[in-house]
Length: 109
Image (cartoon, rainbow, N blue to C red; front, side, top):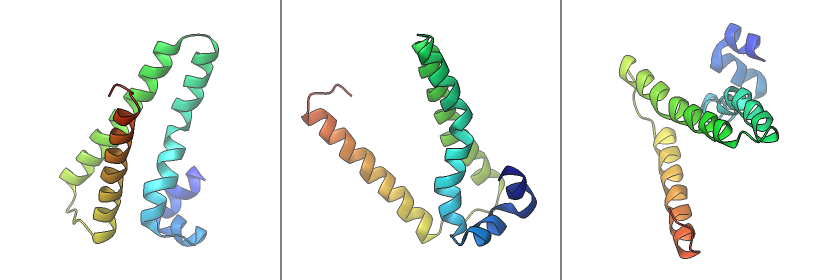
């Protein structure tokens, strides 16, 4: 899949799969790029190295969730579309909902 993605680009692969490029970019590609970190973390957990596993997952999330998109937005003529803004709003609403329910159930956040 990676070689096909590199050859065709996101738009080409999205066309082959019959889904939108935005859906591919928001859901499928992040899962594929995080798989190595997940596998390493599972292996470390099995070896009782939970600190390494947690640090690996957290670092990967921060890097891929903040630094890469910020760099892409800063270096390209990016225009926010309604689909992207709705994805941001859904994410913020989900985070707010989780925060409220975790506080209501006594989980420290």
